Amino acid sequence: MQKEVVVSGIRPTGFLHLGNYFGAMRNYVRMQDDYNCYFFVANWHSLTTHPDTKELKNSVHRVIAENIACGLDPNKVALYVQSDVPEIAELYLYLNMLAYKGELEKTATFKDKVRLQPENVNAGLLTYPVLMAADVLIQRAVKVPVGKDQEQHLEMARNFAERFNYRYGDVLPLPYAFNYGSELIKIMSLDGIGKMSKSENQMATIFLADDDEIIRKKIMKAKTDQGPATPDSVKPDYIQNLFTLMEQVSTKDTVAKFEADFNASSTGNCIIRYGDLKKQLAEDMVQFIHPIREKAADIQSDTHLLHGLIKQGADKARDRASETLKLIREAIGLNY
Ligand code: TRP
Image 1 (cartoon, rainbow, N blue to C red):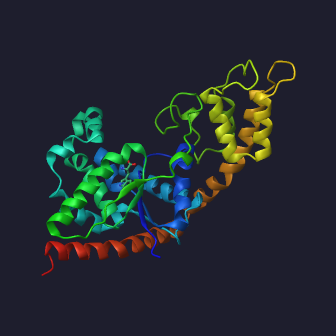
Image 2 (cartoon, protein in one colour; image 1 turned 90 degrees about the vertical axis):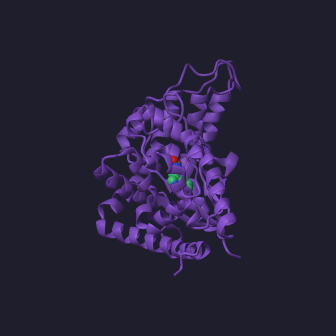
Image 3 (cartoon, rainbow, N blue to C red; image 1 turned 30 degrees about the vertical axis):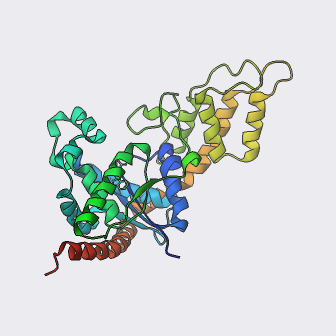
């Protein structure tokens, strides 16, 4: 049976952290065996906010290296850079004729950006959802692993595809948002405020590029409290977060020990010591991140290897993209 096609884009903004790892990357890694996957770095999209392009280049390289270090196999998936696939830009052009100014102006992410950067409300920002639709439709993908904040964009992609099919003939399958639902793990910031994030409190976010000492320091500073007053208490969310992290990186026995300490009481007092829990978590986290960090750094510093990988990804992506574009040109009648 033909595997279903999956597309997802990764924004090359800053360093990847544990929230990205457990929320998104690990799902990509899981999908690579079950689906025909196209994962790319969305560097054209980044240009809508006018970043420093030297930094952008480093970020693109880092994202590629980190994704491979986390287990994406470039021989199983197409891992590529958006700007290496000019077919996307051509489809973007056609879709722009099917996207209405009114609907683009009503997009939630556009309204946010207008508020954030009123001095730079460019047309690329307005048509961000059209470019995203082109990313997906150029591979004729049916599943798109994205978070909640991207669902409106995907709905727009379906609308554009439907309009295309209605006007020119049935070429584009309709793509749907997809994730492993309840199995998705949310990682809170270590200060207990919101999610781990690139832009908020950096000392409360663990990055895949953090060195061993920084990892230890961040975990030892994580928010805790006096401990539960009675056995079998409900864990406050910042404590639950430490347990969640532990479940990901520690052995079952370790988790079971601290669970028991949290719940157990011989004397009426719970015996958990958060200092011990954090020490153990820190060591296990160091063991977990260390090989990923080293592998990513190795790939990133080997320009020859990196360029080879990027080329390999682009070739795979363009194979299917050019097939789609041929169908599209024929459907519109642009085959002279
Ligand atoms: N807009 C997405 C984000 O902000 C990134 C993205 C760009 C994307 N093109 C895509 C995601 C295509 C999925 C499919 O995270």
